[in-house]
Length: 624
Image 1 (cartoon, one colour):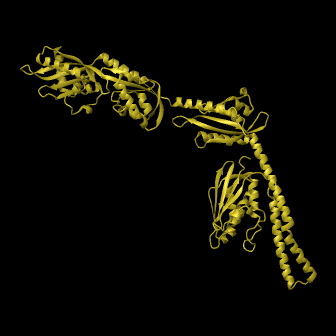
Image 2 (cartoon, rainbow, N blue to C red):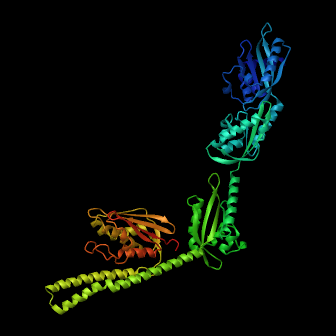
């Protein structure tokens, strides 16, 4: 069989692959030293891998293995080597402690053979290394325990640097193991607490009395992306032959914190709403389930046994006209597009209608995904009834004022043109009879003018009195198309005055179509009529969404209105300018005011003389 050994030796000499296979498979390291030139040591990569180093980390360091051995063990190594060099019969076989890259201790058995010259002098040294089986098995078990731990586990040395981290640490913090190992543990903490923690670690290693650093400490940690999150940390000492290490178990308690906050909010809401008769509800978005407190069942007029707890059970109780809008409010809140704060109607089992106000918060996970809605309901039926009564009373009051104004006009302003007609008619008959020449022509002209004026006043008065008297229904009105129609009707006026009308994106509104068109027509017509001499009229129409409807603004660059006239302009037949300067009956803005009030809104003006005017009005019909 000797031929096989010789053949094997020759194969190893000629084929590096065989040698690499042997030393990587059966050994934990191989060394070859030049004893004639001390410091020139060849050390296999497997040795450094056993200690957790990469070959690049130990380049250009002669005899670098000596820097990793325990100083006390190095003395024994040197002593035994010298004995082996002096006496070939004295074997070199020694187990020593080496420092792993992560700070832990590794026991390695080294067996060596000196290669000698013809004078029996040791000139080379071959050393084979193998990790202690028990040590290796124990180390591997420890690493496996760290990896299967449900929490992030890190080990920190007495310099405060991370020497070991499990995969859960990588998952929670977002760093790779390469980024973690060797760095200060403060990289995982907010800057405001890093220095304090560094001080605690220092105290921990300095004095045994301070080593009870505790468990279950609730702090904040920082991920690689800079975001902070709450954690619970437990620290414990890990004694090694090289000194003391710290093992830290870190648990992400974001969900726990969120649950605690929800419980606290729920407790506070319960206490705060008992007297206010406010119902509390929670909607599990993921499982499509609703949970109500006792007050919710009172608000909806149903029993617990008749409530399934499904989302559809709430939908079923909604007024048919409010279902689509209410569901849209929920959808917008879940998609983080709008705060959930709305009103809707519900129908009780006895078919009575109740008005409900609802608000809620949407709770999300760390990815921003919606988990649940927690909210409140309260009954606003009485408030709505009071508002309706107030509106009706305001309407009656407004009509009463209209009647007063009508009576005043009928008894005063209408008498003037009527008397003129009568007087001239009388003179015409008494003095001239059937011959109409001379002064008769003048009288005739006056009669025509007075009659025309009277006709305008009567027509305007009739139009005003008819506003809102019909039984038209509120409809969806496209304001863009309405403005286009108004501009077409006023085309001649706009062209002759070279007026420019600008609009923003105008909405669809719930309104009386003909009245809303008349409203825009009166305001735009006035803006053009009361222009500055020599200045192109520019009218800008803007709108914004408000609770229950819309607020419009019609701005012009005209002559403006004095402060003491702002309230007068909306009075029927009230004119601020002479007829020969600005034609009209003085009824346009009174029409506008009445139309706005028919839509439960208000109208007002902001203006200064020579600075243009901005007419504002609201259309509040969305809840009708």
